[in-house]
Picture 1 (cartoon, one colour):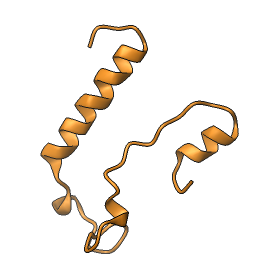
Picture 2 (cartoon, rainbow, N blue to C red; picture 1 turned 30 degrees about the vertical axis):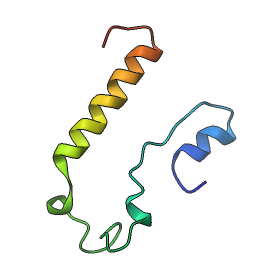
Picture 3 (cartoon, rainbow, N blue to C red; picture 1 turned 90 degrees about the vertical axis):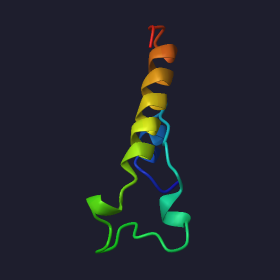
Length: 64
């Protein structure tokens, strides 16, 4: 119950959170001064975005 989706749940609105558990992994710079664009895994992020977009299309009855 630690992310932005909780406010939606509390209002009875369906919501999900997609995460790679970054802040729970040892040694990550999550929310520190070292948390910069240079530390992002952009190819991984692109794949996550593709999956979320495809699932959103499927849920909406659209062809991804």
